[in-house]
Length: 160
Image 1 (cartoon, rainbow, N blue to C red):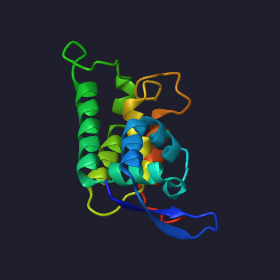
Image 2 (image 1 turned 90 degrees about the vertical axis):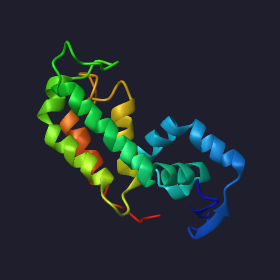
Image 3 (image 1 turned 60 degrees about the horizontal axis):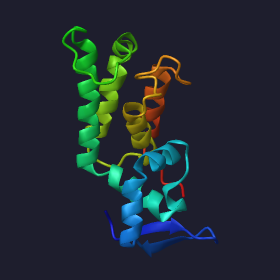
Image 4 (image 1 turned 180 degrees about the vertical axis):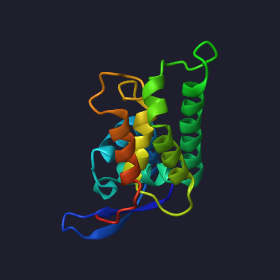
C-alpha cells in the first residue's frame, strides 16, 4: 500500500497525508466494512483508511484475482450440480441468466488502466457477501441489477 494518500480537508481542498502503519493495518482488517462504504458511495478521500483500501483493491493483481473468482463462480454454475464444489450454494439459474454480464465484469476488471474503486468494491461484495443475489434469492437487488451497477461504477470517477 502507498505511503501517501490524497484526502479532502475541512476546507474541501485535496491534501497529501502520510499513511501510518496503524492506518494500513486498519485498512486491511476492516476490508469488508470499507468495501461496503465504498459501494455505498463514500468517497475514498474522506478517510485515510478508505483511501488506502481503495488503492489496494485497485491494484492490477487484486483486480485479476477478483476476475478469476468471477470465472470460478461461472464454472461452478455451469457444472452439473453433482460435480459442483461450491462451498456456498450458488443461484445457478440466476448466474447463468447473467453469465454474459459477469463475463463483461471480469473482462473490465482485467482491462488495463484505471477503474472505479466503487465498482471494484461492489464486485467484491457480490462475491463475498452471503446475502448478495449471487447466493441469496431474497437479496434486496436482482443479480442482473447488481452486476450492472458494479459494471457502471467501474468507470473511473475523479470527483472528490
